[in-house]
Image 1 (cartoon, rainbow, N blue to C red):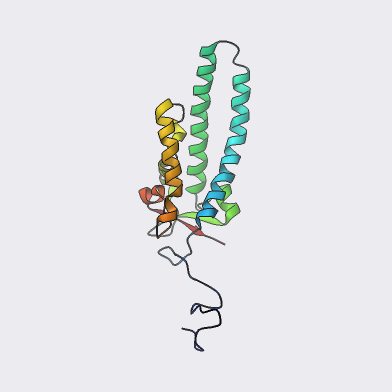
Image 2: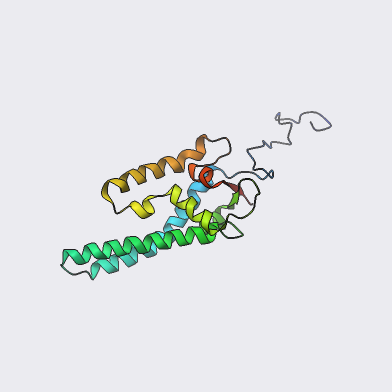
Length: 178
């Protein structure tokens, strides 16, 4: 308690401040909406160029159906590699931030040490979050993967440490850095 009792507004933690969940080092955890906006920004950064490339590739496929199917498969593989590389390199870096996370002032950290997670764990994290990256082109599995991704993306909402399934799988938290 502050030395002069509870201030007006009723919070014993300061004038209007209400503590939220923190990581093992006492740093505040990111809000779900911050994570959502960050992933939308990242999806646009990755999706727009890949969409243009895919459109150009399919536009030159000609009338042969087998050429279109082959180009779609190649585009899916290239897209998966680019997406996994983007998230593993940036989330696995010492900053732990993709461009979207930088914009939102949040970062991915190891849940126990608070340090960086490295590119391998960052790659596993994105694959657990979004398995449709590699399964999207498989008709039934792609749909199931999309539904799972939705549930996984919502999972921080009902977790006391604001961890999604993907965070729990690789031992990470998302913290506020500003």
